[in-house]
Length: 604
Image 1: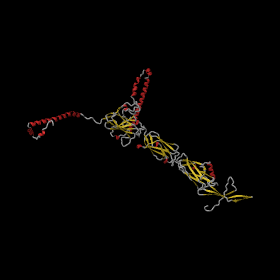
Image 2: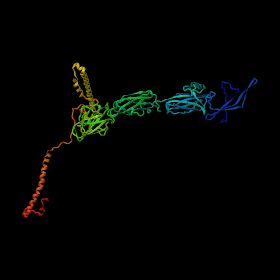
Image 3: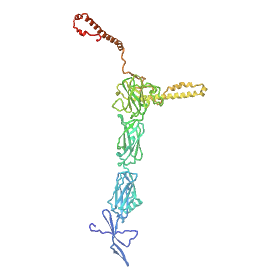
Image 4: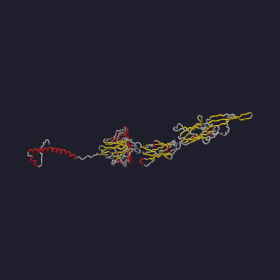
């Protein structure tokens, strides 16, 4: 039409189930650039029979039909993208179409939608484009999905409201001949939608997630865990099966980095659980690797906190012996958990008791009891601070500093309570005058703790023996038994007295008499009584007594002389005036003013 030249159209015979009427004509389809067009049937012919002869008669009829699609017969979709895909990877499916003449046909218009299931809220709906290929009648749709999940693909062919659903089979061959198309349609069994499973891609280390409370914080002696979730480049959870490992390395106090054993379990769902337990509190590095490479964020910082306080391991060191009034003395109390770790929070109750006497023990539940039932020295002032040690520039975990000031001299025993339980290990540093040079006797404290444990075990064993003996004795002293063997209850008195003298309060730790241990060896030190001396020495008062007795006498004599001498002198002067005082004065050979000498004794 554009050149004014028309090609010769060849006739093609089409076999149909119903023979056409005895008239036929030429057809022509005209399509615009959008694929829309019209079908023309023109120049019809009819076979007319006259007698024994049949001859065609040309007709001048022309018929016009509006086409909804040039693909009058069938379209079928095939290809792997209609059943399974990998997230982020481009995938294809094909559409083959034939017209009513069973010939491959181009010019089709398609509408494709890729919709996610309701379970995938973050998955978008896609509308990929279908394009013609170099093969007539074969169309290609290429697209990719980033989010793993289950999707539904719907394919429509046609224009506007005049559309048909395209069926097919993902595994069928993508052929453009009518037989291949029919085979795909048969395999599709009339399906109108295709269900596609989009799987996650390969695990991508930078996007792999590690989380869980055990990744950054743990407690000594407590089993902790964290979870590793493998993700691909599009943050989809992978199926699992990767080689995941975790290495926990101790980093605190410059110690050699020992590693903590841990177990990594593949949960078969793309996640891996790492479980570990350590008794050493402090700072750790956690290196998580997947297939030999670090995951995103690795290594991680882990802090292992101390377990709850174990009073049996607490100890005190400082100035206990040979103290003086008027001075401030220092004692440090170190709190630890059962693994020997320093506590890391100010959560303990520390009490300082200066005792004039120490009793035999506090009754169970007697919260007002002090000094094990003894007498408390009230002439003392104390101040307790947390986190302070000998070096004032550092922070000391789990350590308390006690400043105490004694006002009166005497013999006092110092007892320290940790959560209402008496500490059993004391180390005197009094001979070291500079507290900044003190160091916590950790090794000695461990030996002291073991010593006290054995002492406590021996005491408990001895108590059980005495209780058993008392029970046996009481049974023998019952009325029936006594009448049989002559035994009375008085025979058990010695056993009862022995039991009464034993400690009655098992919750108290330590010794009632203050027990010191050597700061270096940890061995018990021979019993030494703490003595508080007065600050000032009483002076020698003998000379003071001498002057206290004689000074009043001397002062009285001086006062009497001060009165008598002027009186005598005044009397003499009066006699001089009466009896030639001029001659007497001249004999004295110095000038005398008689007016000045003339005064009354009373005025003097």
